[in-house]
Image (cartoon, rainbow, N blue to C red; front, side, top):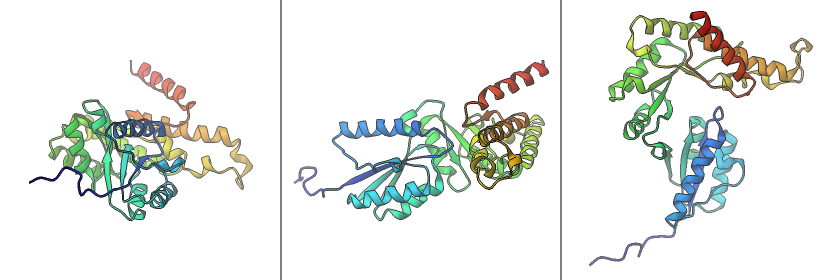
Length: 279
């Protein structure tokens, strides 16, 4: 004897909140979340979504507010959708603050077969992300502190899971102008020299988040109580990102992620200058 499906199924209220690392476009996570909600509606599922900016978690304040709204809406469980380079600390804050069970899912399945990069792979979470990349034929971003040996070690661990080395992007963690840029430059330089010497664990393309690092520096965020010699705030902030990005590009970075549109033409001119000088 079999009872009809759902006979004793309790009525559950499900919450849905997304996450996006704040150095990447929020709109990407938003589009993916809308696609997920559309798929839910087709199956008769109506998740509760937090209202306002906290619907997509980028900060700890977003995480706390999202959890509070889902609790107020009497949600029994929640889904945390990692739509775009998820911010690990903020994700953990949401899971901590929400009292019910939380299922964390990534956007890998949506882009199966596409050459998208999943991340960030670190020594504590790389197995989960690499497994998703293997299942969906994607790439990963391997992020380590600024250290040659740690970068190589993580690439070895990832390759041991049978992910081809050509599907790894290395993020050595960068420093902005005035905040460790010189050391970052030297580490990237050593990684590139090792790659040219034949070290297969340092030959992966390198991605750097110049915009994220530059725009969290004091010089780009503060305009009160600073010396007059610092000059115009807007111009100073844009130059801070541009100088950080061009230095990392000349150090050997292959993918430079920036925020302000005025940085892009400068980077293009720098690339053209380097290529013309090489020819």
